[in-house]
Image (cartoon, rainbow, N blue to C red):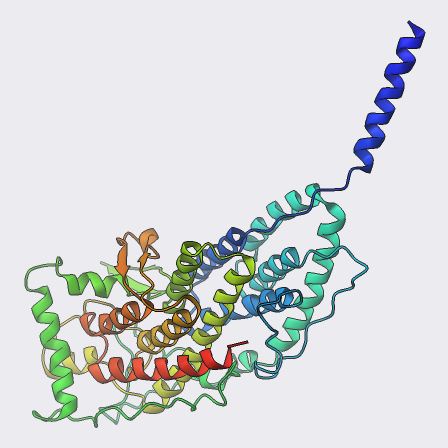
Length: 442
């Protein structure tokens, strides 16, 4: 009996030592983790109500950090050093450490995102759940990967601090010129100040300057019949009358609402005013990037590459567009129509609080469509379910260009842009997109 007990005891010792000597499991990182992190950022952006230009900044820096970490081992994608304005190499990896670069990339992505939002606890909750799982799987690999990720985060914070964003927070508000009838005026129902009037002072990522893709001037302001400007004004009014005559069932209204992407819509009910929140135009195209990445079964490197290059183009598109908006400072259709044609007229979409020319949707959609076409190819059919959380149905597109054209014309259907802002904005965005796609062929 004692001999048997001894054998069992020795067997248990062998099992314990064998299990202790077994190598810890390697932590696996899937593309879905990056989609999950992006989705969480979108949720927080909606909650925190970031303006479209600021939202573009929140997307781009985490993506760049993740991309640069993965570029350390990639045979397909090269570093952005020498391509991005003012960007220097991230810290080197200590090869004596057990650093999982894919793990470091997602950790850095989430940590930088948390630094750019208000509701940090919403990102921390995602981080904490993942950190617990990773630490249980392989504590050494997790700890050393996290330590490297935070080195990159510190590096990125220094880069971010030099983009002039903090300085623009202290600059003067936009001054409304009420003596000039062509100049932008705050619009109902909230009559908000013009947002981000100094966004053209943000450091571009690839552009030489905010003025590099300055569009052609809009038609000269005039309320005389027969002039180009008056014709475009009346087109906005007449189109809205036509597409609403049979109620809210027209295809044009469906298009306008699908591409609304207004982060803050004021709703008045009696004496109460509240806001309905949605994603920004740039976030919609980040959502399309996710759809394309999933459809093509992109791996981690390919997924981060798509997010990074698309978000860079979107960020530069906002800088370019906002430069023109506050230079031309053009009045919105709603103001002129109410003052001169029909005091009771309302656009289908709520007019956003910034000047009219050029259309932000057009510029951003044009730029994003070019870069996505460069990555995934033309004639890329996809089902866009980005707006499902906001009660809007899926729309199908035969290509990214097809989607960008619809996004642009949606602003006419919505009653918030003249045709020149739409067509010239799309040209501006596509020209910028081709420039960026060429620069990003790494």
